[in-house]
Amino acid sequence: MIIALLFNWRAYPENDNYWEKIREVVFKTGIIQKSGRHMKLAVGDILVGLTRGQDPEVIYRNAFAKSDFSLVDDYRLCDGFPTVFGMVFENMPRMLAVELDAALLPHDCYLGALSVHLEFPPHRVLYRSRLSPQYRIHGTRLRRFFSMGNEECYDPEEISEMQLLGFSDVALEDTGMARTVLDDFDTLRHFERIAAFRELLSSAVDLNEDEIYQLTMLLEDLSPKLFNALGAAAERLKVAENEEDLAQVALSGRRYMEQLADALFPAVECKRRGRALTAAAYKNRLWAFVEDHDTNGPARLQEIGAEIDRVVGELNGGLHSNRSKKRVAAAICDAAILTARLFSLAPEMVRNGYLAYMEGWRGFVEELAVQNDRVGH
Image 1 (spheres, rainbow, N blue to C red):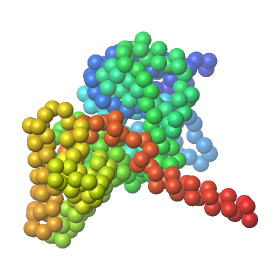
Image 2 (image 1 turned 90 degrees about the vertical axis):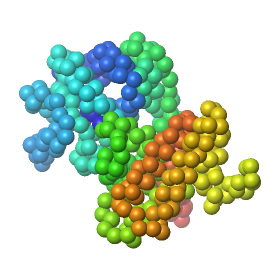
Image 3 (image 1 turned 120 degrees about the horizontal axis):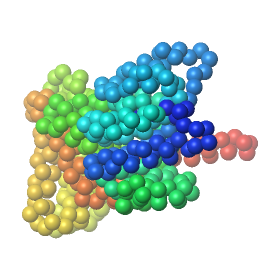
């Protein structure tokens, strides 16, 4: 799930850095490190105060009473409102949130935990737009985020402090254009598609809630543009009513596989072992990617390659034959699971904080050029 830990920052002395105090309290428990869970963390002030004309009851209800999962202490929250600071963890299992909640309750400034749903507009504003991406956490491995090459944005002492809090492998990670004004995917529409895809996974494959959130975070994190295509297919499938509708979903799935091949192994004119690697030969290019990045030998190559062939065959079959909605749904989900498997072969190569956002960047540059021309004339 996406879980927010809430704190009353007004309860800390004015001359204290309340984020450092809260960070120490949370990570000193060792619970997050011990879990080994792969999570991303964003932090910031969820609410600072109320402006004239705002209805406090509406804001309170939308911010704290619209969650599927809640361990909020209402008395503490009412006492702290509206000075609320949040640590928002993406991909935190609810049982881990329960364990953390029990450990943090003795901390007087702790207000509780709740699930965040970014497809709900107020949650997107309060728990996404106002918060700053901070860390990628995977057990005792921690990466401090910085954006667009700006490594100077963090305090070097922070690395030492996090090591003292139980993180043995600490380094930096450039998130590129993600979560900047150039991010085309930080939109309500994108999060609606993510929710639709999670719903599809929960109904079509044998994955539990934790596995669904983990798969979704991995796909969206590594390639939001590709994930957008999967989410769009899931939305179309939800409203599909006839054979033609299902064929369109299968077509979206095939296009997704073509885009996946473009991202992992761009087309070239040469051949490999007699197989074409052109734009049309997207299945061969997926095989070639596995050949280049899997080190477990021919048996593993054949296993993954057979799954590529099967998924592509299922999606192509959905274009021309009368497939059930359930079978088309399973094919879309299998394409997502296969993608995660392919990404795992070379995660550092696949994760690119710039490539997926180039359209927004080009639009930004073109707009600047237009404005400069106007000034010049």
